[in-house]
Image 1 (cartoon, rainbow, N blue to C red):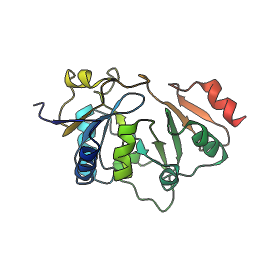
Image 2: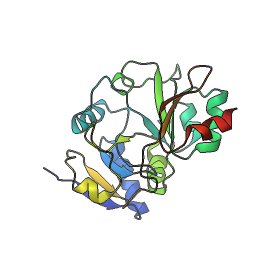
Image 3: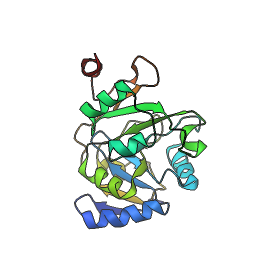
Image 4: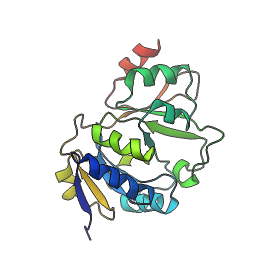
Length: 208
């Protein structure tokens, strides 16, 4: 069943075309600074549903969204003092921030799992950022079967059991190779949801 196009990260003109396909519903697997991700237009429910199917992911789990600017992130979630300090220091980079969804943003319930919070990240990867500048927003979850090891190279994607997506963006091997750190900024104190590429000490060093 593995019928998908492979496009090199180096072909910027092709990435613009890929972005048009994403806006129309295509599902892509792509490199970030941390691991390979799988994504789609977050406002096309059918595409989001397909990602859950591809990953065999529990639908009670919300999905993160990637973007290329802090300004676009602020259109999705509320950034308090802690959030502002963190994004100024660590974005673009391996930090995912969970914040309260802005009241005027209507996201599909399948993205948020009916929660009032959303995880957002700006990856530090030229290829991913190029796509995001054209698309603005992209679902960005790990490109693997749920509970399987995260994938860090295009070769391992090709050799994996992952199938059903439309395009593989070939960026060879990711630079960091482990998942992003996830933090929750919805309370007065910072809460670390998942330890990852950025150490907890570095986080608290910025906000204290």
